[in-house]
Amino acid sequence: MRVRRILQSMSPQPPVRASDGDRERALGELRERAAEGRLSMDTFVGRVDMALRAQSRNELDELVADLPHHGRWRRRITEVVSSISDFSTRLESAWRRPRLPRLSLPPETRDRYVVGRGSGCDLVLSDLTVSRIHAELRRDAESWLLVDMGSMNGTRLNGWRLLGPARVRPGDEIAFGDCAFLLAPPA
Image (cartoon, rainbow, N blue to C red; front, side):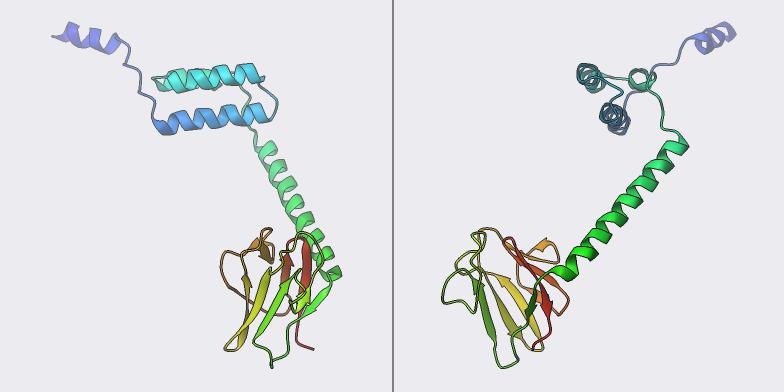
């Protein structure tokens, strides 16, 4: 009995089966290294194939064992570069925004204001990215709603394409196709 326990303790443990999370971590590591240029495309494709076929955690560990790990400094540098990039994007947006042409909201006597390329519209824009009847501003109780009228190139509010009616107020950036405006209070 004692000999059997000794022999059992000397025998290697069965390999731990690879979970979907283990496989995804290995694939993520391979993707990052390929994006950094540390793996050729052929090596990347071969290792991804092996990762998808791997049955144990040890097989997955062997696929990424020779790849350099991200150091703390590299991670911090990446975070700093990312924050600088985000700041420069916000700065560019703030710089560009005041130079947009102003579009005054209609006076309170109007309930509907149609924007488009057609001659019957209240605001006629001759740009080819603007549909004949592109969008309209509708008065709703105490505010204005911007509604896209099924235009081909869409209507955007503060950079987001409208999927339904949206409330607008002075200071919002609206765009009809490629024509962008900064909403101003009624004149």
